Image (cartoon, rainbow, N blue to C red; front, side):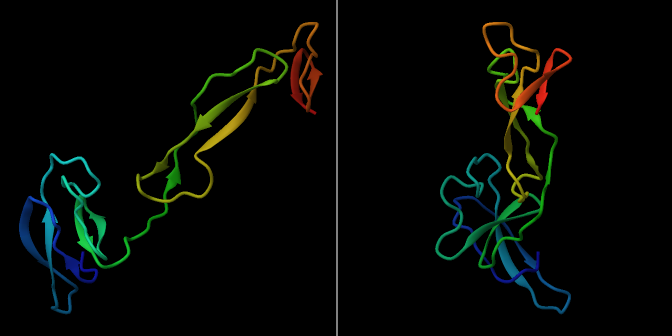
Length: 144
């Protein structure tokens, strides 16, 4: 790690002490949360970090640090259909798609959901063949 001073976790279960630091010879003393059965973000039954300290993940271990967590830029996974189309014709329906930003915890630009038009087949009378914004072409509705 070697990034600034790392404060001890306040977990009920503490693992062994480690010395880490830059190659200049200085070192930072750390204690890591070592309870793999915990489910909270800090890996401990109660909040791991108190006061000005923040939980920082480093190679799968959570530390309490005085520094801001290292931010990472993620990338979007492909869209997948989250809901079904809510209509049957005329491009009058919509469905929702979602995608995940990977790896978890990183930031991606844009939305994780989008609403898409659906049901391209032409509607039968008495409904209009296509909904507003769409026109009929070869028995399907498409963008005007």
